[in-house]
Image (cartoon, rainbow, N blue to C red; front, top):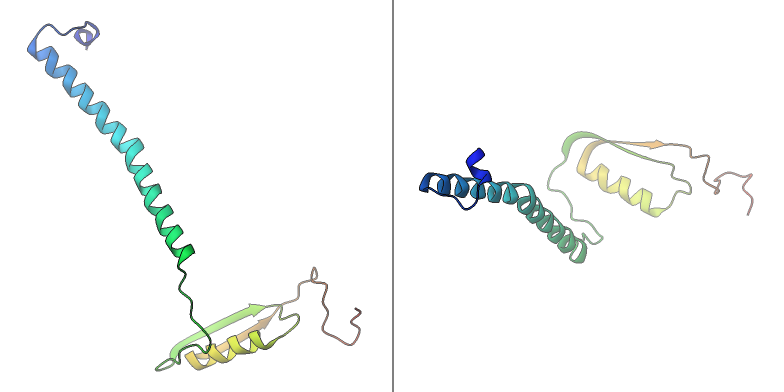
Length: 119
């Protein structure tokens, strides 16, 4: 280790030791910097592709060939209820054997669906 401190190397063995240290430094550089950077670039390219070219399923949605034997829970405040909610429930009931709609209350919503509603 002390022979590395003296430069230039005086023997072939010292030169090989210096070369192996340089190779180890290069491997750690590749491992700790380039590989994570390459993975980041690949993930950003995938994200950009999925953002620019999203997979859109247009309405009417395709009919499933057979029902899946699962229970599905669709939770929401449904405040105010609209045709989109009913359409999601209809689609899920065609695809799954049991669908449960859970109606929750969100006190932060300003719209009320009762006779006391004010505009």
